[in-house]
Each structure stands twice: as C-alpha cells, then as structure tokens.
Length: 70
Image (tube, rainbow, N blue to C red; front, top):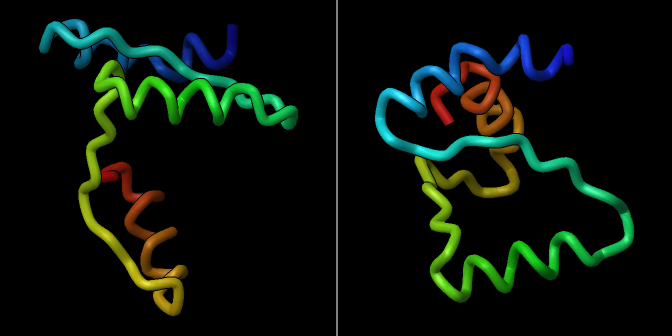
C-alpha cells in the first residue's frame, strides 16, 4: 500500500502518456534477472538510458538517479 501511494504521481504521468507502469520487486534467486534479460532481448522491455557514467563517477551517477531525472 505504501508503494502504491508513493508511486501515485509517476503512475498518473505514465497513464497520461499511455504507458503501462509498475514496480518490479527482485528476488535474490536469479530467475527474475534472467527473465528481464529475455524480455529486453525480445524487445518486450525497452530500457531507456538517460546518461552513462564510468564506475569512477559512481557518486555523480547516484546523485543523478536521486534527482528523479533518471
């Protein structure tokens, strides 16, 4: 319930743009990452890469992510 309330704004924006949006909870068993990889390779999921950072700039990447832009 908390996540549903917290995601109301982004879900509303997605719905307005005709985008199906949902959270994905990961389990540490490896099956979900494999399924995600299969869906990406099949073109069902299309990741959007806003900006790439080298590992040495991890703090800047985290700042960008925390800003809500990525």
